[in-house]
Length: 243
Image 1: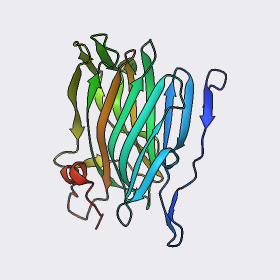
Image 2: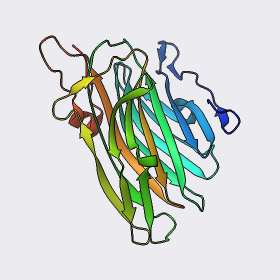
Image 3: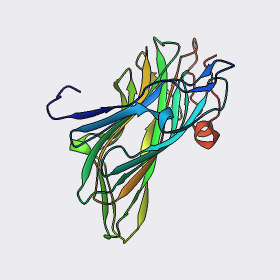
């Protein structure tokens, strides 16, 4: 982290997860960084749950992390280094004060792409977890709740200046955070090493939020706009190839 005097950094293993050693099948590098209140926790998603090879290059990561005091995070993501990320993330703020979070899920990609067509989407639900009769989710400092990342840099954003609330005891509200590149994928940046999804938001005390999201990148076919199969990926994590 840049400011080492104010940031406590917990470094966890980033080793790949070997699923079938005899066949040499190795999961891609899919990691997370959770930041809140000057503290950061990072690790490989595969070290905090299960990793399943669901296709020739597709992997399902399911796990949870409570290494940060007062916060529990759980996830279920289908990923492909050729590349897409789709799945769900849940955060529970177990403290008595509102907390701001920045959470990155980052996937190593292969091969690099000098030109891309991209698409993405986010939706979710907010729950009054402590029975106070109110819950509030806002984007942090007027930014975006969802940001698609290419090599760690901005690609597209959704839920800019967003605010969602619950006003009933133990109530839940669902929200659609919008999409980009649907139904026609849009031009994106070059991608050399990674793609990712960043969530940045403030969550009220004792409450929880869950997100369902996707980020897909394709190489444009000559003279043809390649479409990302968004509906299929959300439904069953269907396979997509740049051919």
